Image (cartoon, rainbow, N blue to C red; front, side):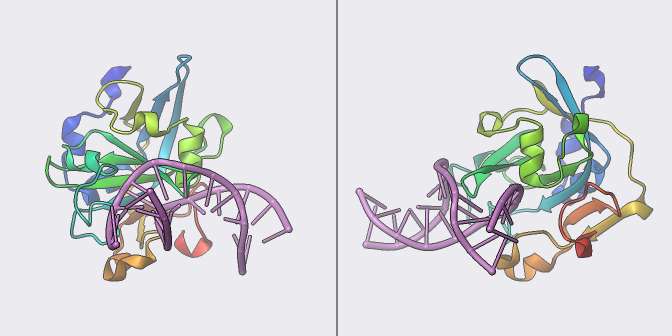
Length: 188
DNA sequence: GGTGCGATTGCA
DNA sequence: GCAATCGCACCA
């Protein structure tokens, strides 16, 4: 059912808008063997542009963050702490680097996907998918069961305390109270 | 060419 | 509380 795949217009908006709209959508991954994993997103974070001191794009374009500078609709995958992958959805127009970090989905096929590193592991996402298009291919997003406004909660982003006043901005979006949201209770 | 560290996780 | 583990950003 590729007709359910979200198109370019969904991604080519400000990261904050895309982040809110990603809650409840379905992350889909077709494995090399052909099996498709699906999980409903319940936690994401927006990284809004070069002005955002928490964003990898804050210090300009580098080899690692190059996909963030493209038009929305790509995956930006990187390795943290030498062992965990993180997956972002690139957003906005070309030349305006922004992205949304995918932090948790409801457990796909019984696996835990609570936390950015666990999510990429559960969906078998690594550097081979860095720069991959979400508009075609083995990694994409689909419609899902929407999260109504009354269930959306915004908090500060996790693990970016170095970002000064940007660390305080409420750019993390979660489905309030959901069991698969990562982090300490305070952030739920 | 060398160095320090991170959008995290699991275990003591 | 803290070690694991390595690509890459930055400096020389």
